Structure formats: C-alpha cells, structure tokens
Image (cartoon, rainbow, N blue to C red):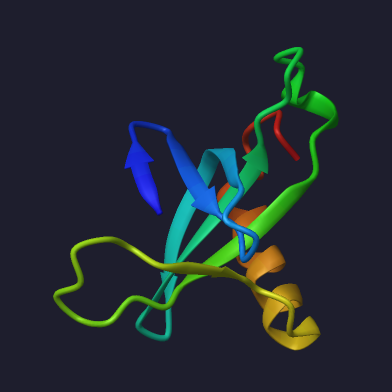
Length: 92
C-alpha cells in the first residue's frame, strides 16, 4: 500500500492497483482505520462507494498493509465513528 497525500494505492489479491481517496482516518482500540472512496475515471466521486480499511501491518514494517473490514459488527461500529467525525461535512 502506497500513500501519496490524500490518496493511497491499494494492491488487490490479483495484483491489480486500485487508487483510493482517503476521506477520514481514525484509531480505535489501537488499530488504525481509513475511510476511503475509489477514484473514478470521470472524477465524479460523489457516487463512489466508500470502504473502511483496517491497518494490519507488522510493527516497523516498511509499507502499511490494509485489509477491507468485512466483519458486520466491526463495520457498523466504525461506520458510526466515521459518521460522527464527518457529521459537519457534505460527504455523508
């Protein structure tokens, strides 16, 4: 995972690169989480789906490793946290 400013490049299991825009970042229970949207070719990110990524890197790793949060309980808790963080913005 490469981080460049407000964007990160995510490498899928099929070795495909996907560019995400970082909307918000938070730490919960000692884990770092990112709320991201996929970059669209036409630049219209208003309709883009949002994902929550969890950092799973080993301590002192050279590159950050993130996985998509799929556990429903964890996902809902994080969605609530991100919604509160973004309640004063036009994103949500």
